[in-house]
Image (spheres, rainbow, N blue to C red):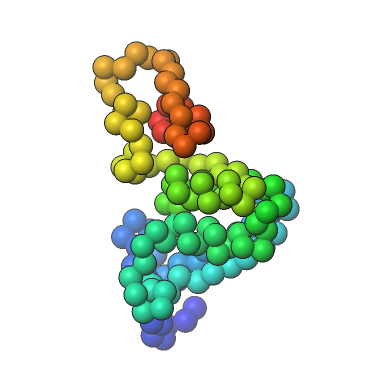
Length: 136
């Protein structure tokens, strides 16, 4: 255990150990082999980051782009712009989409008046999206 000062140590309120180092990793799903790693240092080029999730996924997947593989991510990283970019790179994206994303049409947001076990389909830029994409 290291007790010294680390400039990129982060505080995560929800974790049992409140302080630590955040590490982004890319692993192979079949072998659990570590393919890429990136340590979160708080800023990129001394500026606050916008679209961090998309940047992290694209950075980690850079050596594997254009090979037809699929990417599975946590809801922190997933977004429609990331899905579009990976689609351009001949890759697919799977994950849970947070309901506060601005790209989600209001008709797809959770609704107490909606019929149980109903489905909705829509197209966004030529791609079909469903209620299951938004509210699994």
